[in-house]
Amino acid sequence: MSDVLLFKTTGKITSGTSTFTLIQEYSYNSQIYTYVGTVEFLNEDKAKVTFDDGSVFYVNTNNLSISN
Image (cartoon, rainbow, N blue to C red; front, side):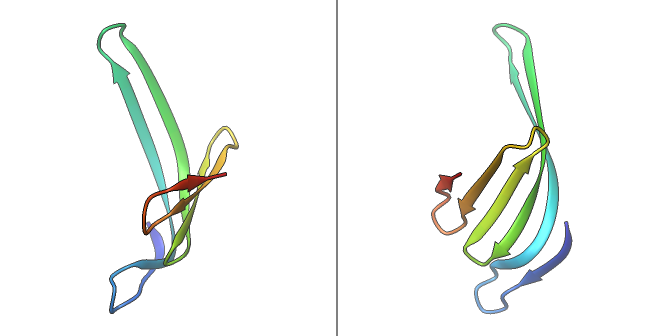
C-alpha cells in the first residue's frame, strides 16, 4: 500500500493504492489461475480495481457491491 489516508473517526480508507495477487487453485483438476492488479481507493465509499488484463471494476466499500 502507498499514500494511504484514513478517516480518523470511521477508520475507512479515503485514498491510496495497493497491488494484489490472487491465486485460485482447483484441486480436482490441478488448475491454477493467477490474477494480478491494483486497487485505487477513490474515496471512503469507492475503490477502483484494475486487473493486469485491463479489466476495471468499481467496489462499493460499504456493501462490497461491484460495478463496471
